[in-house]
Image: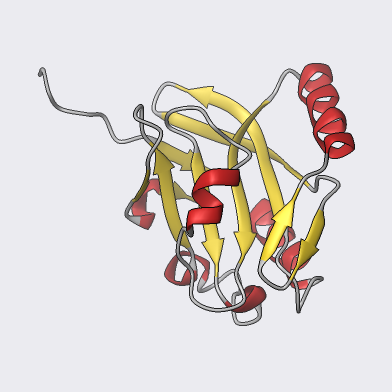
Amino acid sequence: MHGIRQKMYLRIERTLVQDSITRLKASPSKEKVLLWLGKKSSDGYVVEEVYTPLQITDEDFFHIPEAGMTELMAKLRSTRKMIVAQIHTHPGEAFHSLADDTWAIVRHAGAYSLVLPYFCATTHIGNFKDTVATFVLDKFNSWNKVDNSNIVM
């Protein structure tokens, strides 16, 4: 079976997706980022927690300052979790911008980056997988769009 790559799933409870949508909608005119923390599994990742890092945001960008990164690293150490995905909003269409590529928080091969359009205004639990744009980081440090069937809720 050389050359066949196993599909890597992102497993998350619907309650955590709903929590994420609620938190993202709380910022209706600025981008916002959340981090999904969890563990690696035999076929991908399992999200165990939604984490809101300290962040600086505007209509078309977000940045986690040094203090936010320090808090995040302490959180990861104390919980023994990893960042399995970042999820953030865009003011318009959902895509992975050059800024998203450059400033992504999660940087390990197989990591997920999810983008929701229109500051998440029209997203709800029933259409989440239809509206989110999903990307996975490959071993060459490139973000590649993947089918949302990778997300298991």
